[in-house]
Length: 147
Image (cartoon, rainbow, N blue to C red; front, side, top):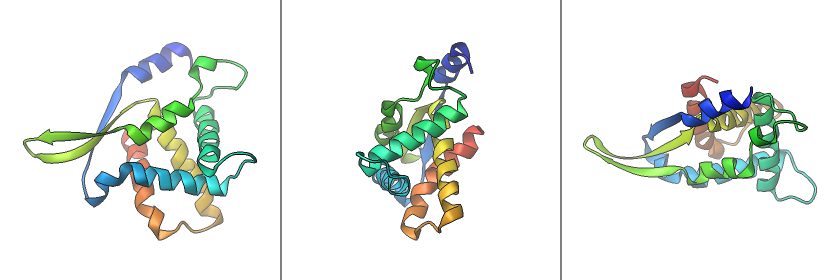
């Protein structure tokens, strides 16, 4: 993927309205998911969230076909992953009030990377029931974007 194609991806946004009881807990769920991923792929000298950031960045760069030697501007940054934690907005509408998230299309690759990592973990061991609702949002976004 070259820089022009990636700029076109970044110009498009995906808006996803969240329904259900867990819509207010997006950030807490994402933190729990990062803790879980980081505990399964520990790196020396890093916290579990830091380890999760590294693992997600590597998987996202692999999906974007970005090598570590070239295309530094195309690589996924820690801030792009962290922006997911702060991406929920309150949407007052005539149909009702819901939370929604608005993410750049490139960040959809991050959700795809999370789905791939969680499926890799689930092949080795079962995922705790407390984390199943945390995994639903990345799965939904992964299939909505269709990456």
